[in-house]
Length: 260
Figure 1 (spheres, helix red, strand yellow):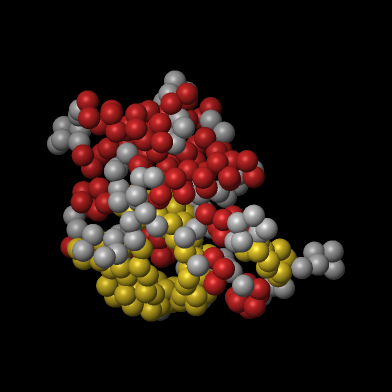
Figure 2: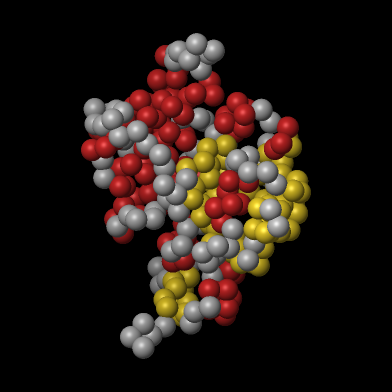
């Protein structure tokens, strides 16, 4: 049984339809790469799946209707890492990660020893233990991104949603974050949906790729089934070449003739 199942999902802003007829299933331990041009609806879909937007259609999470979940229950099931996480620069790293424990705190807001144990686990999982005495404002972009993911992990979610987690990062930090995300799905058994623009990087880590175009899913399958030159070229309105990586067999994408 899928942890997450959306059927005929639609999101409208007034008279404008942003998503229409979206069907999506995500299993525990699965990493789904969400791709598509700017404005295709990727961020909107993630926010709808997190319960942060009103929607039409049906979304079931852990065999429960998403709208029926309380805000506390939803926060215990879903962790959302936005494209530009809002992190307090003056807070120490552990204190920011502790914010993820908010759904579990008592009515006085006091943390228990177990809450700090979860914080330690989340920081260890994201490689942040060496930064425990640092303030967030002192961190690099890649380190801040890991703090945002650790904060989401401290919620102990079963579904992790990430919106462009590698944006504005250099290649080393992109690889670092993507390895972490893949590990969370495979070793921690989380269901992960990650929106991203770099088709080659997505293809290297995703179990499945979902391609959005103009608010609809136009392809869903393995990286090799979805990231094809004809399909990507048509959706992104660009001439591209796609060939298999000689080591992994997964697709590598290159835009043709940038010199012209």
